[in-house]
Image (cartoon, rainbow, N blue to C red):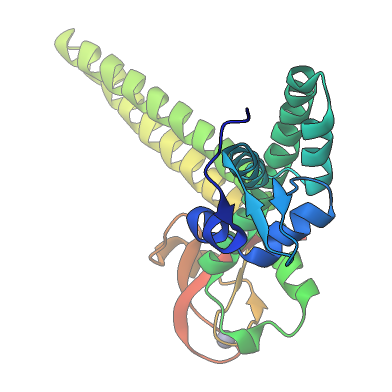
Length: 247
Ligand SMILES: [Zn+2]
C-alpha cells in the first residue's frame, strides 16, 4: 500500500517558496517540475519530492543558470558530471560579467574624479579624449617619481660626503662640494619640473577650456596629484583644473 504523502496546493507551495503560482505553472509547462497529481477539478497538488525539486531550481537560478540548463541537469542521468561542467561554465561567465562591471565602475570613478559641470561636456568624444589624455599621464608621473627618488638619494650621499669633509677639516673642498651639490640638485629639480611642465596642459572644470599656464604659475600653484589650482584664461575663474597630457 502506498504511504499517504502530505500534499500541498499550488498556492501553498508558492507561499512556502516565495514564488508566484504563475512560475510554478510555467515550470510545469516547460517540463521542469510536474505536480504530483492534478485533481479532476484542475487543482494541482505537490508533494515533498516536487517541492525539493522546485527548491533546487530556484537555487540554480540564483546561481545564474538558465532554465534550459537546469532542465538538462534535472533530466541528465549523469547529473553529477554535467553539474561540474555547468558550474565551471557558469563560474567563467559570472567572472567575465564581474570583470566587465569592474571596468565600468572604474570608468565611472574616473568620470566622478573629473567632477565637470555637465555643460562642459558637449559630447562623448570630449570625455573619452580627456580620459585618455589623463591616463597617459600615469606613466609620466611614475617616471618622474623614480627620478625624484634618485635625486633624493644623490642629496643624501652629498650631505654624507659634506659631513665627512667637515670632520676631516677639508674646508676648501667642502665649500666646492656644497656649492656643486646645491647647483646640481637645483638644476635637476628645475629640469624635471620643466620636463613635466612641457608634457601637460589643464582643463577648466567651469568652461572646459584647455590651456597651458606659464612655467612660473605652474611651479607656484597649489596642486594635488591630478589637479592644479589655476586661473582659467577663458572664463577667469580660479579653480582646481584637471591635468592632462599634451598631444
Ligand atoms: Zn574656464
